[in-house]
Structures are given as C-alpha cells and as structure tokens.
Image (cartoon, rainbow, N blue to C red):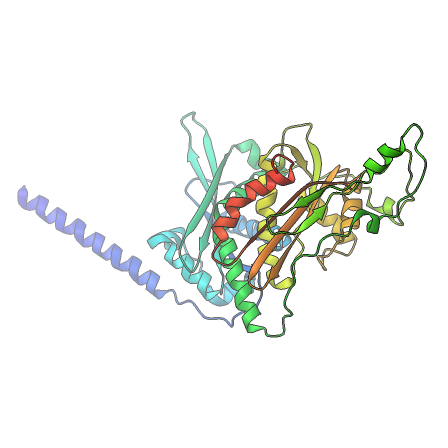
Length: 430
C-alpha cells in the first residue's frame, strides 16, 4: 500500500511538472511585436483590456470586449486626459493571439504590463466582469476596474456589484460603470498627476519652441467687464448706493489678489447679448451616480481649468479632483459634464478649449445653473499656479476664491490641499 501511494504521489508531481512546463512554454511562445512610438503628447496613453471572470454570461466574451472597448474609449477620449491605444496598434503588438485571463494576471499582471509597454502606454485599464453564485440562490455580478501603471506596476482598483435588473437596463449599467471608473480614477489621482507632470515637463524639454507660460492673469474688474447703467433706485440712499460699489479683495496664498464684483442694483436692466437665447437648453441627460447630491443645493457648472496645451492633462486631472471634492461637500447639484461638453461643442469652443469668463457665465445660465466655477492653471518658471473662483450667474459676483501653487514632486501635497480649496470655493472657510 505504501508503495502504491508513493507511485501515486510521483505521478501527480509528474503531471504538475508537465502542466507547469506547458504554462511557461505557452507564455514564452507569445512574442510581442514592437510598434513605432506614437506622436508625442501630454495625454496619458492607455490600453483598455476587458476580461471575463468565472460564471455564465448571456453574451460571449468577444461581444463583451467589443462593446466595452467602444464605450470606454468614447468616454475616456471625452475626458481629454487620455489617448487610447488604437485597435490596430493592439493587433500589431499581439498579432492573432488573444491572451487568456490567467496569462494576463499572473506574476502581478506582468504580461499586462509588457503589452502596455509594447503599446507605449502609461497605463493599462483592466475592466473585468465576474459572475458569482450568491447565498440567496441568485447571482451577484461584479464589475471591477483596475488602473495599472506600466512602469511601476502599481495597481489602483474599484468595484461595484450589480443585479440582473442593472444589467438589463443599459443606461443604469452605464452609470454604474462610470461611477466605478470615478472611484478608480480617484484612487489613482496622485499617480496620474505625477505621470502627467513628468510627461509635460519632458515634452517641454524636447520642444524648445514652447513659449514660457506666464502665471494666470487676474480677471478684469467688474467695471471693465460690464458698463454700469446709472439708473436711479427708488428709496435707495446715496450712502447705500456707494456701499454697493465696494469691492471685497480676496487675498490668495500665492499673493495674487482677485476681486469680488458688486451685485447689480435693484431696478437696473441689461440688454441681452447676441445669441444668448441659443444657450438656453434643457439638461436632459441622466445624472451620473457620482453626481447625485442632496436636493436643494445650488446648480453648479464646473469648467475645466484653462491652461497652456503642454500642461493641459495636468489641468484636467486637477479639474476632475476638484470636481470630486466639490461634489463631496454635498452643497451643489453638479451639471453633467457630458452635457456641458455638448454645449461647448455646439459653440465650436470645445476644440480650442477656450472660453472667457463672461461666456462661461452666460453658458451656465443657459444650463439653468445658478453658479459656475472657472479657473486657470499656469506656470511661473517651474512653479505651477492654480486659481479658481465661483461666480453667481445672475449678479456676476465672486462667491468664492481659491489659489495654490506647487512644483514637480509635490503632487501628493497639492492633492491634499484640494479639499481645502474646494471648501474655500464653497465659502466654507477663508
């Protein structure tokens, strides 16, 4: 009997050895081809990799891959932060081979990193679906997003659990997917900001023709933006009228002074600007889960921080983080970013990325918002300077102002300051 057991153990070990050799040989047989590097850009280049976990599914893996890549690529491109590796590039690197899930995730996602590097990607965004049997004789559907840094191997993860009803309703499922992405992005924000700054500074060194960027200029004073209409106000004393003209100076940490503008006097009127009616649109897009805030808050439009092209990705990442921090305060109802982009696209300003303060306020009013947040990210030498302010769309008064500065290597420090900046913008601290 002992002899029989010994033979059995030897046989099992032999089978395991053969299986190990087969696995190693299979991995070694996958030869990743090289492709020329893409055109230099400050955007974060990503490889979108959908995976199907265990469980039974109504739609096959190939269909899931195709739909996921199309939807996610469309969304990521709209953020302005990412450049998604094209399908043709992926095929050029992998050839006809379609890696299995076990190949991708073994050794700390080493093969996923190798594919990402071959595609010249900064990150691999892994999107996985898992179907597990629940204790209530039903199924739990897990949706997992991992953001993998191809250089360092760091992994940032978020997940959500859905039911069959969620999966059958496309709009609801899309909202869940986007909310999961937001959580994953927020966990990776420090890493992405650091990568974006490195890329922007490396690109600046390579391109000697880039003109040095000045610090954001202070917005023009109220009397420069709007001519005052001197209409007598019944029952208003001269001293009260003078009080209306006072401007409160708000001193920023960077030593830059912004001015809050006076509210228009009661009884005054302003002529409508040409084309103003064109921006009066109704926001019919669904409110994202991450944007669902307590009712009764002011409706707020948050514009992307204006910046030079070489640091645009840095500005967009900071905008997204600031947006999240303002959302977490639960004092505002945020206008859907997709709706804002659609309106800006119709104004043919989206491509240029430029919108002045007066136009921002007008567009915000057209979106039924009562307040807007505008801001700038500029550079003075090697120092990044961020400024933002919250404006009332009816009175054009500055309701909140925030400013900070940082240099490369202080990414974690500046991100830790953004919750305080959000509170300053919301008027919760001075």
